[in-house]
Image 1 (cartoon, rainbow, N blue to C red):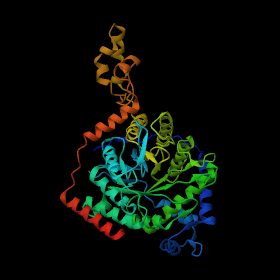
Image 2: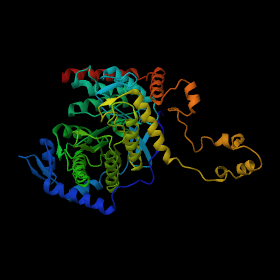
Image 3: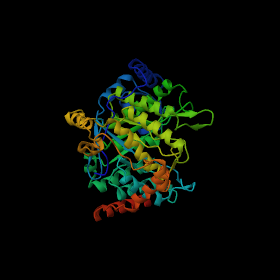
Image 4: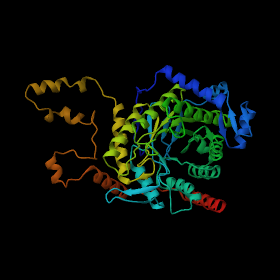
Length: 482
C-alpha cells in the first residue's frame, strides 16, 4: 500500500445552522420544481419524461418534482468503496479521509528559475510517478493537459499513463461519452474484465454540471457511460459565485445544490443504486479583476458549506482544497493553500482535492511535495492522543524531580513519535546551524525532494497481457477518433 491511512475529522466545523441549511434545501427544491434545469441531451430528456418529470423539449428544460428528488437521494448509497490497483480498499463515506491529485493543469513552472512552459507528455509521466510515491495522495487524476499530443487523444492516453506509472486509483475526467468508453475499457484491461472493474472499481470519475442550471450533452454522455455500469461518480458543482450564480453565498449554494441534485437524480434514473459522492468546488468570482479567487478564504467557506449539505443528505462528500492564486510556491501560495486545505479538512469531507497553483492552471514539482506535507499536517489533527498510565508518565515525572533529565529517560525515546509528527520539509534548526548547512529554504528542499523521489522511482510492471490490451485500446481509439 503506497498511501497513508488518514482519519476524517470527527467533529466537523459548520457555517450554517440546521435551520439555515433547511432553508437552502427548500430553495433548491423550489428551483428544481418551478425554474428547472436545462438538459441539452435528447436521450436524457426522454428518460426524465418517461419517469414523470415535466419536460419542455423545445426549450430543453426539465422541472423535477421534489418527491422524485427526495426519493432518489434516499436510494443513493451512503457509503461505497474505491480500490487502488493493488486492491487496497478505500471506504468512502466512513471514518477515513482521502486526497485527490490536481487535474488538467495547463502549465508547469520551474520555481527555481521562474520559467513557465506548456505541459507535455514527459511532465505527465513524471508527475504521476511523483504522486505515486507521496503518501498523502490517494487518488491520481490526469494531472496536466498534454500539449504535445492531439487533444482528442490526450485524456485517453493520460489514463493509460496513470495505469502504467502508479498503482493508485485512477480518476480521469473524460469530456465525451466516447472518451469515457475508452477510459473504462482501459480500467477493465487492468482489472481483468469489466465485471471485475465494477466489483472493485480501480477507477472513478468526477463530473461538473454547468452553471447556471445546465447539463450539457457531453456531461450527460459521460454520466450515462458510468452510471449504466454502476461505476462510482463524483458530482462537483462549480459555479463562479457572482458570475455564473448569484453573488450571495446562500443563493449560490441553493442553485449549485439544485445542479448537484438534478445530476444525482439522473444517475439514479439511469441505474438505481449507483454510488455517488456529493461534491463542490464553488469559487468566488473577483469582481474587481474578473478572475476566479481560488486563494480567497471564501473558497474554503464554500467547501465547508458543500460538506454541510452533503451530510444533510447523508451522502459521501467531496470538497475543494489546496488552492491558490499564486503563480509560484511562495508566501502567498503557502497561506492560501493551507487555508483551503485546513478549512476543507475541518469541514469533514471524505475526499479533498488539490487544486494546484494559479487557480487550477499551473503546477510545479515542488508545490506537489509541499501540498503533500500540508495534507500530512492537517490530517495529524485526527491522530488519537492516548491517555493511559504510560502516556501520563507519572514515574517519569517523579524521576525528573529526583534529579533525572527528561531527555535521558527511556520513556522519552520510546514515545518520541507517539504524539509528534516530524517533517522533512522546511528548516528545523537555529539560524547558525541552518546557515552552516547551506541556508537551504523550504522551496529548494521540496524541489530536491521531488528530484530524489523521481530518481528512485521503480517502474511499475504490468503483465504482458495488460500491456498488450492497453496498447490495443489506444490504437483503436486513435483510429476511431482521428
